[in-house]
Length: 166
Image (tube, rainbow, N blue to C red; front, side, top):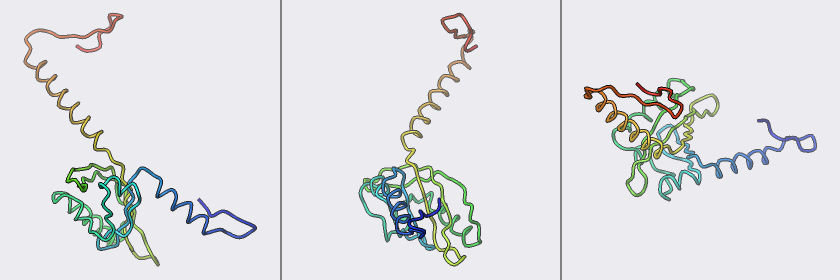
């Protein structure tokens, strides 16, 4: 997206305001960190997702459970080595109430003067989706165990008499 042209001049202010509005109105968490993993920016959705606590000035390790504290460190090491296309990952954070939140996160290396300057994290809360997936997997497992131990045959058919499961 290029800046708007107003009377032959580029309006960088309008563009910055537009991007700021997008960042502040999205439902996705947006965090920016420096190269030491200290959060330097958090949008309104991040505050809401994290339980209303402003994480600016806090290390990522302060909001990430111990078991996943190495992931941001791995990414920081890769960015220090010049890798700019970091993969998406699931990240478990802890909100102010101590509840785990699972986020689907995209990350991007931020540069200044062609040198790594920080990381941008954009995360979508997928906690409920993961809970539903876990319940579905548990249900599938129970169903599979029942079918494995049955001595009789089992089948399902739709209302037209077509077999849907044998």
